[in-house]
Length: 84
Image 1 (cartoon, rainbow, N blue to C red):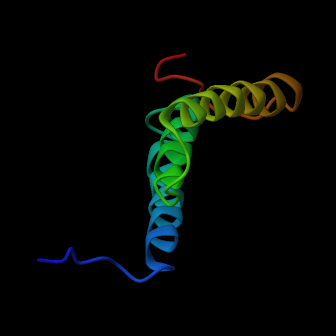
Image 2 (cartoon, rainbow, N blue to C red):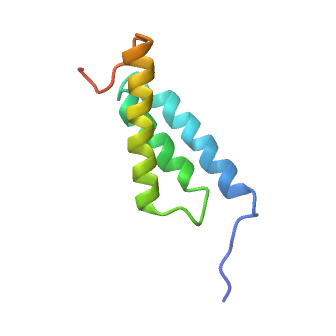
Image 3 (cartoon, rainbow, N blue to C red):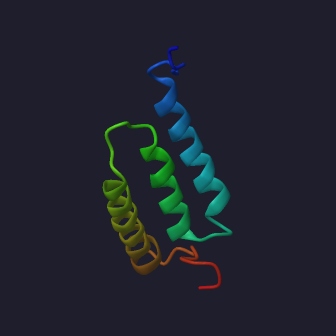
């Protein structure tokens, strides 16, 4: 019995699409940090070589950098966490 696999370009395309949709849905209600973490997590599903450790590290660094730039330096009205 053989496993059914998706075409080569379908997995990355679906994961990137899902990550963009998740960001759009989460940015206002869940905050910038959660939206960025979900975006990175879903986008990483498009690659078979990215590890969980790499994904978590990228999400943490990216969330911190975006928080610093957009909220700290540019004074954009993003909430970092719900209620914060």
